[in-house]
Length: 142
Image (cartoon, rainbow, N blue to C red; front, side, top):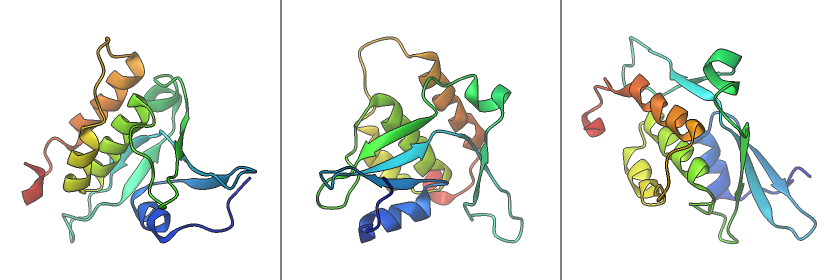
């Protein structure tokens, strides 16, 4: 069911995520449900380093590329999301942080993005999102 109490850490994370929902099971364990939509940054000429996002949910640009349309991320008792729940979710969180210009947090999450098998098409699609921000002029982006 939908959680009625959300930790301050999860609430802060909610400022980063485009869409999210905190769920709780009968054992009071919380999970963040995060849809893995395609992303686009909104260009604001008067504020070039702002980071508003638009989600892209068309079949051609999103749903035909993913197996799972959302990730269910466990929340640690400290209130932090457990990183590395899956390769796919970790990779998507890195991309999401890059889009939001949270470069230090993205770098911290990258240590959870490793695998010893060939990339699945969904992983390749997630990585392709980075190409949309390759010309980011923010000083911390390089």
